[in-house]
Every structure is written in C-alpha cells, then in structure tokens.
Length: 328
Image (cartoon, rainbow, N blue to C red; front, side, top):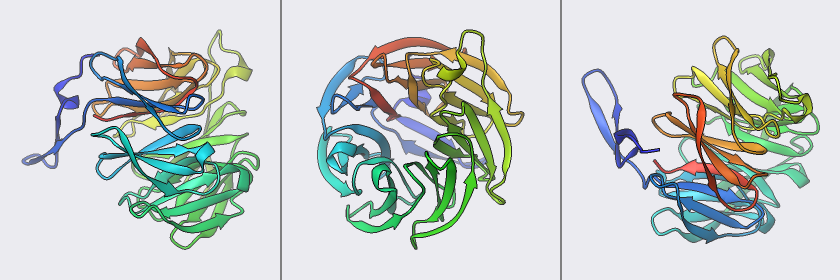
C-alpha cells in the first residue's frame, strides 16, 4: 500500500464548511504485539517491512494510544503491568500499575484514567494514566472479564464477562457496578456506535454479535455469520472496528479465517474477506482505505484494501500476534 496524502505527515480535519485545522500525524508505522515472543514488531507503512523488534514484558497483548499518540501503552499480562513505549525513540519509558494479568484496557476520552480487566481475579483495575498509579480495584465484575470499553462520554465502561455471558456497566470514577445485560456465549470485545446509542459485542463461542440498546440495555438485534466453506464451529467473532461515520463494521472471525463486512444500519453482512489463520485483532487506517488484522496462528498480519475488500499483502511478524495499532 502506498499511503495517500491523508496518511502521510499531516491530516486536514474539516471543522466546518469554511474552516479547517491541521493535525500533524505520526510516523506511518504499524505496531504489532506478539504474545508468545514478548516483543513488539514495528513495520514501515510504505515498504511493509519489519524495521525493528522491541523486547517488552511477558505476554504483550492489548495496546492503546495515549498523549496524542506520542505514547503507545502495552498490556504485558505476564508482567502484571502496562508498559509505556515512546513512539519516537521506540524505547520503553515507564509502566502503569494494572493489577494481576491485565489483558484488555481502555482510556477515557480525556486520557485521564485507564481501566484494565484482570481476568483471573474477576476484577478491574482503575489507574491514573499520567502517574501510572493504581486508583482503585473494582471487584466481582462477572467471571473472566475481558473487553473494556469507555462510553463515548467517558462516564462508564462496558465490560464483557466471558463465563457469565454478560456485559456489565461500571462507573470507574466511583467503582460502582450499575447494571448488566445478558448476551451470547463467551462475549469478548465491544464497540459503541459513533452516536453512542448502541453497543456491539462479539460472542466468540456463540458465533454472533449482540447489539445492545445503551439506553435500556435490551438486545436490539443479533448478527449471524455463514459462508460456504466456513465451518460453524470455526466462526469465532472477536474484534470489531467501525468506520467514523458508523456506516460499516469489520468483524474478525477467528478460526474461520475471514473478516465480515457489515452494514451497520441494515445489520446485513455484505462481504467476507479472506485473511490469515485465526484472524484476531484489527485496526483501520485514518482514511479507512486499509484494514490491518492480526492472524494469531499464521504469525502474520493481513493488509486489507477496504475499497476492494481483498487482502493485498501478508507481513510476517512474531509468534501469536495479538493487537495491531497504526501511527498514521
């Protein structure tokens, strides 16, 4: 992929019909966490070559941007903390307390606090993202909590509980559990629609996506996946990403080796894109012309052209790639 001017160094964000602001963008590099190698692969966004392999703590998994993308936060689950990578120097410059075995995490829209799931302890850890210090622990958030997603207004987090098949609504600022909704079998991750009216959650063992009305916590709809050649037991929805307008969702389907393309309004699956083995994490480029997905069993990432809905390249990385983030 040759990056268009919108993914080079500066992106013009239109604020109104008559005015615009210029936001300086990043390096164009792609970062991939390799869970079994304890490394981060850094890929050049033009050549798609791995230009650096960064040693980190044990079992790096989820990654999120912080401080205007000058820092990449990495959940090193086996080391019981979140590491801070300086994106410019590619050096680890600090850690954030995140409880035992942090797996997935999210930051509120202001970047003030970080909430991580601690699967083995059935807890959430709430930390100050700037100081790196733990603020509180929220106990009894189901059994094996995993997905953590801040609401668009930053007031609550929605947390998936894999064993109880529920999504819990938690106020991380007070530590109170407010409500819960029953979804499908083994919910993994979720995403809010841009208007905040719906929360879409993947059900890995159920092979479905549940759509929750965030006002009532009722299930509004459910999306099923079927394609000739895909075995039902291999359809394991995991990661969702959505376009900025909320028109299209991309959902990785695990061992089915495909990414589903869904029309958000109609709930219809419009296409299936062949990727690698055990397709897992996903991220869109800023211009949304390309989707990057990690393939946990083939140890590579697929570069998907979303204008054609086809994978155009595979890039070998480390063992069991988990999460991908794009500095564009």
